[in-house]
Image (cartoon, rainbow, N blue to C red):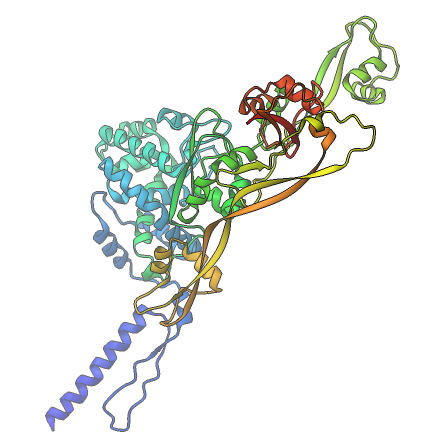
Amino acid sequence: MNLRIYRIALVCLMFSLSVNVHARSINALSLSPSIASDDTSFVIPEVDLSQLNVAPKFELAVYQKRLDSLTKDIPLDYNEHVQGYINLYAFRRREQVERMLGLSEFYFPMVERVFKEYNIPTEFKYLAIVESALNPYAVSPVGATGMWQFMFTTGKMYNLKITSHIDERRDPLKATYAAAKYFVDMYKRYGDWLLVIAAYNCGPGNVNRAIRKSGGGKTFWAIRNYLPAETRGYVPAYIAATYIMNCAEVHNIYPTYPNFSFMTDTVQLSQPVAFKDIVKLCGISAEELKVLNPIFKKDFVPAYNESYAIKVPATRKDILSLNKDSLYRAFPNRLNAESMFVLNTDPLANARTVYKTHVVRKGETLSKLSNKYDVSVSEIKKWNKIKRNSLAVGQRLRIKREIKAVPSTTPIQLMAKNKINKVKESPVTEQKQAIASTEEPAANPVQIEETQIVTVKKNKTHTVKAGDNLGNIAAKYEVSLADIKKWNDLKSSRINVGQKITIQTFVQKAVLKKSEVNVSETEVTAKVPNRNEEEKLVLYKVEVGDTLWAIAKRFEGMTIEKLRALNNLKSNESLKAGMILKVIKKA
């Protein structure tokens, strides 16, 4: 009898303990214990999943114990200042922490590799959380830029290049190397990692001053009261960031992954390329391309005098590598000084309005100036607020001009690999040369062929197996987890065995594109002086970037003068993409 009572008491005690444990870890559990017919078992309580978004609170001693367990090379002291920032992250900025957890899986592996090279504690990576929330585009009110928030002068000091086209402070890898060098320099000076963090925020001058005022304090907490107000909270914020990034789950905070591919690769570009052309070619969003390449200030790769590496999703690397030449040709070409001025100012601009100052000479009138600059008299009077028609010698006039850049052409969705423009050659007979009829010549269609490589979307189907999750499926097919969710209209990361998952892939396919151009026989044969049997006339389709000099160089015996004469081109007439030129080619 006593034994039976003891067993019943033991069961009740175990159930009581179980309920207490659940109540502590989850604020609200819907407990519904039901006794079976034999009165010997209990049903496990159901968990209200909606409560997983609730921010739990803990005893202060719990926070200190967790920080102690995280401490390695950098002391993670716990006090009311640190607790204040923990509360900030754990309660008021939960969504930001979720985003940072997702971004950390992309950036932190790179940061850890760099810090390992310089023997810097791995936990130093959490300083980027405080600095920029892992945003390479972050700019502070005083101009500190990038994931590591370098000021202009400090960036230059650590060899970060900053020009009108690029800012290496925004390059996560280069900025991390610069930050690592700075941390090493400061550690050699102070020998304390928390003081290094303080110096990174307010500069070594302020730290040195605080050390003197404190009477020679050698730790952050010893000199804290003598540091600038921002820096006093900077180190506690770092400790809190380290805590929340490691203990997020116990606060019911989980990663929100960004919508760009984590599997990336680089392609070296040696000539300027517009972002919009890369976007069209690779089939990615402009936002993704910018996130992966924050170094560029404007929407193009300024590879004028040096090459640049462009980062794209790994699945798009081959497409970009194979079609670099087409992208180069699609970029606006600077054919003259005026176009060069426009493009140097903004390489993607269509035109730029400028004012030229004209000094009036003897004999000049408003009418002559309007003809010279191809503007109206009324416009000149308006720009210069002139009421009369008379001008004085030496008078300065402002002339408004719109300088146009060479129009940009997009690289056609198919961007050819080694695009070949073949023209079916049409030999010219001696009889055709002698044609002198006054009748309207008949137009003969000449067929032009273009061999192009097109990118074709092809879907694959993956059947979910035991142990599969969206993460390893994304890694297997080298796509992003966000893409898989988008393609399959998934609202969560939960998948079931046997479920069909659609994976979009891209394959390249050669396509022969044909087109016809009507050219009269008289045009074909006109002005071909003394052509011998070893020569034949062919048609050449002008591409973006072509010049008469470049075309003449391709065909033996051709000169700029011959091309002009053969095609009735005026001396000031420029070529346009798509024009058909007659060219003499040696057999």
